[in-house]
Image (tube, rainbow, N blue to C red; front, side):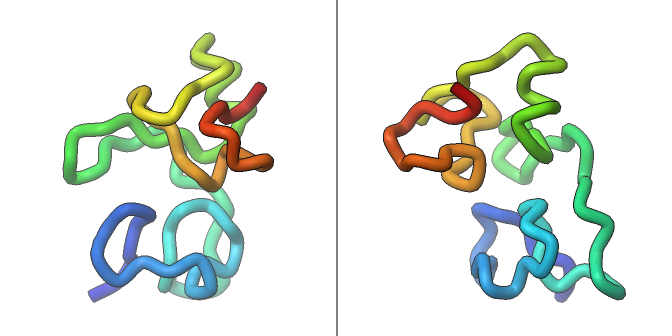
Length: 80
């Protein structure tokens, strides 16, 4: 079943060609999903520009919309 979103069973970064949190997209992917809810009801940000535009930067591990993909140095604070 495709596509797979970050956080869902079966998602792996190596399957995500454009790094947008959506793996196994048709074609080569568009690089942007916008802000969508995941199945767990959490907020999704496509990138740090979207986090900043929403006025939510920086975003911390445990906050809605936090993703390891947005946390370049892995310190638990994304889009700093």
